[in-house]
Image (cartoon, rainbow, N blue to C red; front, side, top):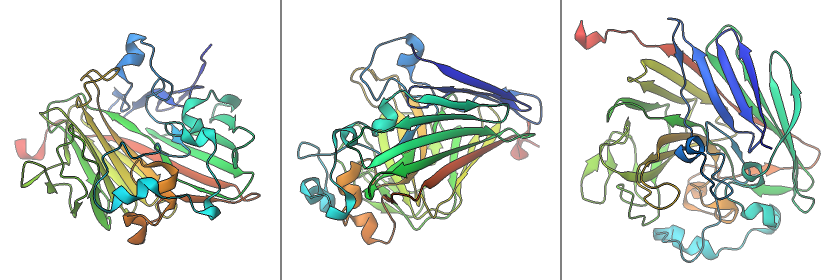
Length: 349
């Protein structure tokens, strides 16, 4: 039976599920006394619907090792990316095993085991299959005492040297009117639209941009991609490459701002998954609405082969994978802090 583990602290409550070690319900108590819940939960979870493995734990956040999925010849990649679907994994990366082929890796599909639960933290662990170069991953959820904040980290141990994409997958709920949720990233070297000819996407594929306020679209011209939700149905993915510090998020509906930060020397990009009712097929059914703000060392969601290859992002000097060495654990993490927005907006004074 699925299990979950909860923890209360001075400024909230957090629940972690054994499935994918995914964050479930997280409530933060702001300085004005209100409780807010920033994270998303897929509608099929709420409805109790059965879905394929890899989607059944689409909640607030989970670690992805390896990040993404393997793209192939049937996927409509464009530009220089197209030739990479037939690339060979470099020998130094270590050959793929079956668990590498799962959507977002074994960590996203398996049931984790509770390692410890104290008044300060919850730690879960997962042993990878014996043929994997990854040996074990542990994940610790630690509230920030005295603050509406949370620290999330993983420690990864390897059996053998390997190169794999990695990412966290924080998903934020979009509950307000169109444009009520603002994305304000820290400085980044360049942005890139998803290089896939996806009918549900509005952005022109494989186009660079310098600001989310001006992204090329397929219909011609440019549009803002920093104000969500969108009024129209769409499914867009953007990557902010070489980002510094993290991302500031402003939710006018819930009158709260969030600061999401991480060590960008280890995870140098932020993937923005803008799921705006664009997927009409099962189980999405045109009802899925959230934004993933994802710290990654990855080339979009293209999986291990493209991430380890000489892809266009890597050619620009931004790493798209992590390197794991036996005997040298790697620690990665992110932090979120919230604060209440003033009830009266400056322009209303």
